[in-house]
Image (cartoon, helix red, strand yellow):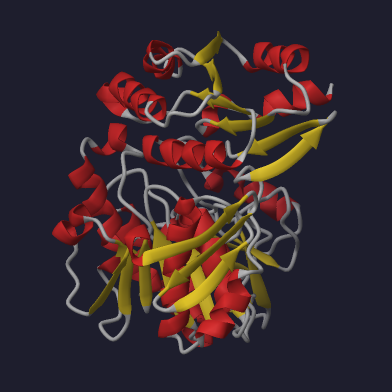
Length: 440
């Protein structure tokens, strides 16, 4: 998206330090590694970096315009705009463009299932509307700006995924998005180590409703903790698996009834059915028929490291290792062992669980030990080992390892094509290394 300098000044409220008077339109660039002479450089700052240190490099690359928070002027620059905060300026530029396109805006957050839900919502809405979405899991404020500024002019619906690591972060994005519809997939223990309690997590997630359109709707999993902290007077739609009649469960397939209509998913797991309910409700709110919604939902496919089916040297893997928290680990393992013969479950540490991290891992083990199906468990890491103790007490076969290379070697030497192997851990465990080592 290209901007006139007058629009950039209007959107950001910038003070003009230099203006040569040339009539040029600019793309926004925040990265000097990919910048070109048609861009205006917007240097972002963070805890460990300061983009303003690279203004000189941008000028050397042929750039003639830049934003700054100081009064520093480079001789070869034709346009220099001063703003108090470059991140705020980025958000304001995104908001300016967003208002010119004026799509229906959908915000999505939650402790687990944000990206999966976003992809399901996109599958449904894109069946009928020109729909644009957050790329991958680029769900912070910078990702918001990138999402908006890559939005085509004919976009009818914008879907923005929002993550958070603390209070106020979702509120910050929501202030610029002003969603028409908001989805909270759930409130769970992810990030409890940072926020201190489930109540604080719920408060943070419900910030998505702070600027929610009063004529829109808030859609969320039916949890008391969400209702407790929600401050929204408009329409509220709550859903859960209790609202569903599951008709069929098979590997890579689910069929269910919801609100009197039949839907299908090309993925297994009751928790995926639950995630899809928000997509169905959003579809209904924007005027889609159940038939259109069902057709859109059937186009959904899991993205990388989220229930990704991989075959390597005759071994079948279900790679769900993008991230993990206690709720998602319990739900995904349950879905896996219900559907696959000779299941082998590889679990790693779950991160950011605070002072109760050992207890959370033990609780996962206690939950899995009560599922009463023969499963071989492979546990990787010191925290994951805590999952194993309740399992061993119930007679499950459990193997313990310190690193991914050891796991890969064990799998190659001890498992065969009769097994299906499930991978689940927090991103920091880098479980993709297991697959890479097996390929080698």
